[in-house]
Amino acid sequence: MLDTREDVLRLLGRLEFSSSRAAIKVGVSILVAGAVALIPGYEALSTQGHWALFILILAALLWTTEAMPAFAVSLLVMGLAIVLIGHPGRGADPKAWVMFVRPWSSPLLWLFLGGLVMAEAATRTGLDRWMAAGVLGRLGRRPAPLLAGVLAVTFILSMFMSNTATTAMMLAVMAPIIHSLPREEGFAHCLVLGIPVAANLGGMGTLIGTPPNAIAASALHATPIGFGQWMLAGVPPAILLVLASWFFLRRRYPWGVTEVDISAIQEVPGGTHAPLWQKLVVMAVFTMTICLWLTTSLHGIPSPVISFLPITIFAVTGVIGADQIRRLQWDVLLLMAGGMSLGIAVSETGLAAWLVALLPTEQWGILPIIIAFVVVAVVMSNFMSNTAAANVLVPLAMALNTGQDAATVVPIALGASAAMCLPISTPPNALAYATRRVKGTDFVPIGIFVGLLAPIVTVVWTWFIL
Image (cartoon, rainbow, N blue to C red; front, side):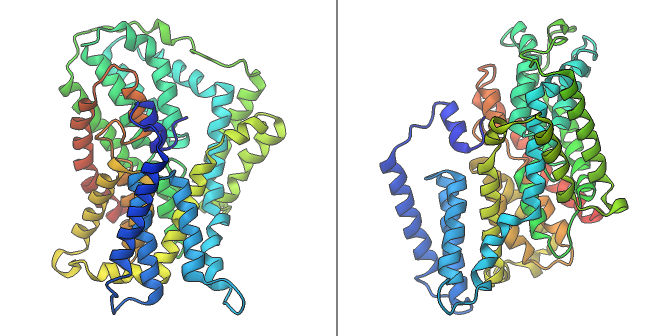
């Protein structure tokens, strides 16, 4: 599965690993970070703040240049924070370094792990393809409702599954239709481009939809945001963006077909032979878990605790085994933990407050500043991991002290999911490009459209709803 930008580039044939090139990138990143953070000697910044600035710049450069895997950068961040800021050793205050390893036990990591286990169970039993094909096979032959249905199914599945896995599955389900159409047919373009767009935007909808959401939620430890509250903040703007994308794709790529043969998708391609009882168990646990997540305010059980329901039941019943556990995206959890450690380093050393003090908040006002943060998140996420972008920006946004922390950082996470201008912007984009039915330039118009609309929609909505 394409879980990293490195995997994406390899798929597109644009990456051939070179240890010498990687070493040069690391060396240059260290020199630049040291020159900016350590040499000037900013008087208003503490020694620990200087080290935090060094770690922040170094991490941003390594994530951007991809000199090493993204999860490795997170581990490096954690190690540097412990050594340079925590100063572990004889006579040292344990609290000074323990706070950097505390993210390993963050409840949000367990929440996200529960989502990964649920997605793996759905994939292993073939439930995801069975549901997708069953719904799409009943939408009729007209292109407009079929495209809307494809976007809707992709959007909903990606709220609870990996965006990459959802895209791969939906492209496989729709492959018979896509390949039956002429290469220049606009409807084929709409399908191939619409699936990754809907998958990327669907990740906005839930706390487990995509890692940036968990990064933002972890920063809100003083005023935690629940599963249902996040959906209230994320789903409406995401739906609006998907609807806008549907209209945009229709106008951008007019189709010549009036009817589509859907008989090929009424049977599940590549379905598994999982027993019916396993599919029933997965459906029941899915339903129960989501209902419990959405009703936390009624029963009081925290969302991370509820995540143990699918983890435990699927393991005990044998729905998932050791092989499936090994296939989980552990590197994503490492990336998230390292990002949380970076956020602690940036905030606890006073670096975040120092950096935010440099911003023209009084001249611009809070809302324009937040919109600017979201725009930066969109731009950065087009060229680096959206999780890495959230890791860098969320701690800085928290230091704005707007009095509405959730309305400040949630749009940044949502904006990170709206980056899709290039084939390499997201793994779903790369999978769509790999079909060879669209060109790299085809991603630019829809990417710019969503990227311009998302900051305004997400900031305005979350400001009034959170």
